[in-house]
Image 1 (cartoon, helix red, strand yellow):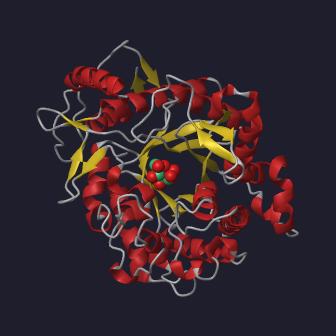
Image 2 (image 1 turned 180 degrees about the vertical axis):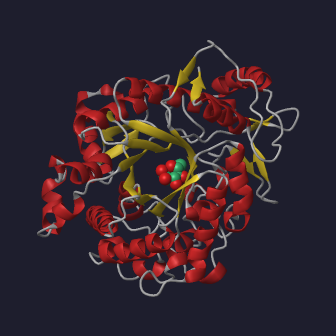
Length: 483
Ligand code: GCO
């Protein structure tokens, strides 16, 4: 590990010098000269969408402002022992008050899209019933600010911050949740839909089900497979019901989709003995969401478990046409058999020699290619946007006070090259959103993890663009990645 770090540090100095990252001079950034290692630039198709993604609880802060109600993440992060660092999202990046500066940072990169999430507890403080107009006003202001800078708003309706009042009624384990979500979705789209055209229903329902309801590592901290199955099925139903309801409004200028985490799952150590663990985990993590949405059925290993939860008409509700699929890709997942895992399987490491991010996640850009081709082949090649890809690294501050995050640049460059290759092989990939704009509240890890293109000083909340910010701006400007 030490060895790898120091090697990278050396190569960083070279890269940093080549980048010559300059200060952010209001408005669009003057693109620094890019290192042309091989001198080759991989061009993306015209109209390729370039953006960044964030989520409400991770950046907004202002958790009691303008009538916002508590969410499960407020409760969870304020429960001792739940967050590794003992921190919470009360302040986060204060994006709620600093959104104009943040939109300026995005404009400085020349982005044409911003994926953010809407906090349900701002819009409906207790989850159902009357709309809190002041809460929606924030997204109204944000939308207008984005459009004024030529950035298309991509709104995700749910990124994990369920109103606590709904959790008190069973949350996603309650079948009524599909109706609650649909009413909320209609209220939001009704207010913003004259300007927001891109709507994603959920973010990573399988992660909510696995870590929030199965292992208890995320809010609301429930455990056990029964909670997992209920949370998957009801989120799938909520997603389908809301998609259908939004479509029934007859708005033809809306593009409706959802965001899933889909990662290739492999048997740890390449061992035959671990193959059943990989097959099962593929069903638990990926296919419990993708198969019902695109194929109208649950994956074979879990069919019998979902059967008692599935009422007449459910699968028709869940199987909805989508105008796009948002793919969040980070790395392959390696699974082994173990007696103490949620499903008798557990996470294992990648093959020896695989590089890792600060978070310990494998760096596997070829896994993105593999995943995009699987979506092409298994699900009829739907229009896909990579809605999250990025990495946590320890950020070096160079001699001139610049954040020299060459590892993040290398990570993104390699993944964009893989994305380019996937398009060349016929994958229907239409855009890429880096995770993420700002260093932010990384769930159970608190603020210890840094995925941002922009650093945020935890004392002053001052924003400082990293080298990756300037590199991404240059990539966006060229509509091509230099490799
Ligand atoms: C997720 C979420 C993001 C995370 C990011 C890094 O995938 O977990 O969508 O909110 O912060 O993925 O872990």
